[in-house]
Image (cartoon, chains in turn green, cyan):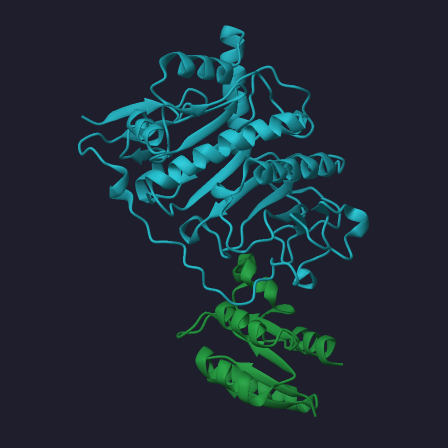
Length: 116
Length: 332
């Protein structure tokens, strides 16, 4: 079973995304901030990361660049409520950028594109 | 006493605040920290960018296997405007709108992450200008576009999000209001005096010397009479030319020499200064204009824009351009 690491400081988002992705047949682990996300990235060796940008301790784009330095082969989907972060060229290190929405289809499509 | 100065092209008023004489050290700025980590613009990570539209020394034909490139131009991975589709212009009552069509590209100025544009060799900088020229030429073939805006954000405060040296261009289906105002200002002066206002500015500044930063046979850098910000500089060709894309390769070399010197003088005055530069050139669909002169405006990010500036369109500048030019001339 493919393992997805979900890094987001909003517990509700983590819960909803986890439920939906488990229903799609993936195993999901989560982290509530950038530091924890980097730790779990190293320890758990996930198949894919879904990464929030606006987090209190560490900007998701900085987390992304550190993850890609560590292992560029693991796909990372940036997931943010703010489309304006697309203008940050650091976001180019990601494999997909999905704007958060109540409809999770776009996110699920991005996950399938990267993993299937 | 403060002084109100009128920009002769735009007719815009600027307040030059002279009460407290400032020195470059009053504008000390924080260094643009290199955050490190994976860089999508570095060699080896070409798969993280969209397929290039131009590279050097390899050409389009080898775009799939880029090697040892000096410069690359790639479409923006997450563009502000999209290239596919029709404009579909329509009105909604008195309001006009159209689809967000445009080309948004990133010019990767060097393969070296730690390079600084100001300190590129004139040869490498000339390549960047050559790339601007090539891309404007190519995008001009798309009849949906009216203008190509080339700009650079340097430093976090100026809007740069990645340290790797790069600039950007956006091809637009409409003319930016500022360019229209400059052209109208130039035309108004031309109708009155039958001369290009920019040519007259160049001649007067060469004669007066007081606002000249540096010059060579082909180009001059000045601090304009009514600058928006401290240490603002304009780089202009000395002979009349309205179109940047009409310039020769030799001209790009000469431009790079003066541009490089201008930025190095600025960096020497105020180390690590964040800045933007923008190319002002004639619209894609215009024939040569007798009353407009292409130029670059280099605008250091040293002051903030607040309510008064937004409300009035005025800018308050605490550094008279004559003093800024003197500091810049003495800086190297």
